[in-house]
Structures are given as structure tokens and as C-alpha cells.
Image 1 (spheres, rainbow, N blue to C red):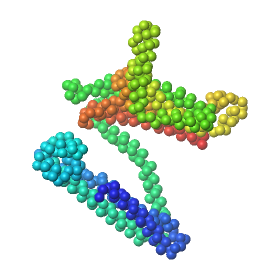
Image 2: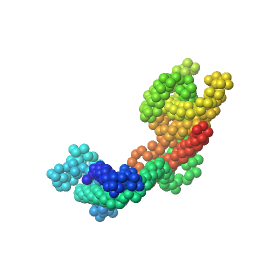
Image 3: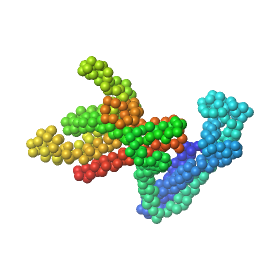
Image 4: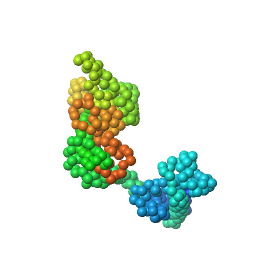
Length: 493
């Protein structure tokens, strides 16, 4: 039985248990709801939860532990020659076995028999079924694949039987405990409370998991490369291990961090004025009809994938800036060589700024409209014009919230990758000319993790050091922005 079918059966059992729980509560109370501690629906929910929660916990534990047990037993069945190989070679062999196991159910008995007689035909037979096998199969792999399928099927059947039995047992025991003085409401609300706590903890646990996964690999990197060379190095040249005797490379963070901050700064120069002025117009000047049209149209920009912005920069903005610079240079000097490259800090900053405009405008608009109406009316009543009211009353009142919104937008700009790859290039260097290409931390993270590399060399592990650095920067920006926004809300709510 598949897990999907099992997860459909258990709610059906819980629904029946809910009905039986209500009926049982009405029966023990003689039809008088006043004789019950809780409403009949709570008794039904109590029985339904008793039928649903224990098997769900069993399924979660089983699906976590069972694959390790099954895979370990299959590995133990490998020939001694395979067991003597390195762990990476054993993992590759087991990956082949798992691929063959997924394809075996698609083969007929005659095809399985022919493959066992001649394993060299396995690739062609599986290819006809739409299953890709990377290498030629060994004879033992077919038997191990059959064993893997059999053990997995047995595990699923055992899980289904135990889960259904546990669900029925839970419903039966809960029905037996239904009594007029049973505090069903308290028990149900306690389960709901713990469910809410678990849901609210997911974000915290996810953040901790992300930080821990990056930190463990980053520690391995800093054991190979001193932290001082990484954080204060000015040269980025991570050579591969086969490059020669002096192949450790140089992993200076400064050029990447400079490119990240430089491109983000240019993007904010584009996004902040346009977004802030758009927010002021929509909040203070636009009619309700214009606002209802302009705000959704502006926020459409936020829904465009970043790769599309990258194409826009590569095909349109970059060549446009290059051609304009060539024309200006030709008019001034007679030499039509362009001084702005198609891939440059300016190109990436402009396109990224366009992408960030809806973030700035939407957040700033919400903050400006949250300023109490009494402040506007008081300023206008004293004789100030609308523009003076905006400059001297509304913007100072909304300033903490706007600053928080800009910091959150800056953290979004720092984490951008695709626009930088296509619009600014991958050159890691330190320079202040915005017409030349630079790169960012996120681009180099992608570069270092691209390809068939093992997580044992500093060339690969440096991606985690870059990731944990970027994580700390963006986390600090977000925390500070939330602090400012919260302080603002405390003032005006």
C-alpha cells in the first residue's frame, strides 16, 4: 500500500471516529448537553484526534528510520569485493542499484530474465522504458535491486498494517473513555495549542537548520584556509586541486563583498527615489480610482522572475548603455569606442533597481498611509500646503518605517544572483568604475558549487563560508529593519 493511499485512509477513519464520538457523548448524557463537560463536537474531535495523531507520528518515524534500515541491509548483501571499496564507490554502486530497482517493475518477466542472463543489455532495455542508467550493471546489482524492492514493499505493508491498527485502537480506547465529566475540550485545545506552537516554530527551526548546515561546512573550510586570509584577502583566485603544487588558491572575500555592496548601492540609488516618489503619489495625491489601477500595475514587477530581468539586462539595457556611450564618445572625441561595457556594475544596478521598485513603493505606501489622519488635518488646518505637510509632517512621522523598509529592500538586493550573472559578469576584482564588470558573493557561491565536485576541497567548501557570511549580513539587516519597524508601530498604533 502506498503512503498516499494510507494518508487518505487515516482521515476517513478519523471522520468515522468523530461521528462515533459525538454519538457516544450524546448516549452517555442521555441526550442532555448540559450533563456534559464539553460540547458533543469536542468529544467527537477528541476521538478523531486519538485515531489520527498516533498513526501520523508512527508514519513520520517509520519513513525517517526505515530507509536507513532497508538500505543498510541491501548494502550488507553486496559481494565482499564491493564492500572492500571506498565509501564513495559503494555509494555509486548503491545508486545504480536504486535506479535499477525503480525500473524493474516496468519490465516484463521475459525482459527481467534476459537482463539477468546478459547484464550488458540492461542499459538498452531500461532506455526503452524511459529509465536512464549511467553505467553498465553488474550481475549482483539485479539481485540487490530485487531485494531492495522486496524489502521496501514489506516495509510499506507493515507500516500500513500497523498504522491502521493503531488508528482503530486509538479510536476504540478513546470511545471507551468518553464520559460526561471527561474534559474533552481541554484535551482538544491542548492539542491545537501544541500544533500552533509547532507551526510557529517551523521558521525558527528552519533558520537554525540553515545556519547549522552552512556553519558545519564552513568550519571545515576554515580548518584548511585561515579565517584572516578569507575575511581580509583582496584576491579571489580559487584554483582547482589539480592545477599544480601551489593549487590551494586565494580566497579573498573583499573583492566579492565590494562587488555585492557596490551593485546593491547602485540598485538602491535607482529604486529608492522612484519607489518612494511613487509611494508618496499613490498615498497622498492619486485618486482612489488611479490608486486602484497604479498600485497593482506597479506590483506586477515584483512577480517577474529574476532570470527575466537578467535577460532584459543582457539583451536590452546592456547593449543600450554600450551604444549610447559609444555615440557620446564619438561626438566628443571622434572615437566611437564605448566606455560602458554591456556587462557592468551600472547595467546590473539599473536592472536590479527596477526589480526593487515595487518593494520600496509597496512597503513605503503602507507605512505612509498608516500615519494618523489627525497629523495631516492638523497641519492643513494650520495653513500648510499639501507638499509642506508631506515634507514636514508625514515623512518625518513615517521615516522610521521607511528606513526599515529600505533596509529590508537592501537585504533583498544583496541576495540577488541571476541579474548579476547576466548583467555584471563573473569577474572578481576591486575597482570603483561603475562602467566595468564586477561580481557578487552569490554568483561565486553558484560557481563553486557547479560541477561534479566532492565537499572535501577548499574550492568547494568556500561556498559555505561565503553563504554563512552573506547569511549574517542579511540577517543583521533584517533584524535591524524589524526593530525599526516595530518601534514605529509602537508610536502610532
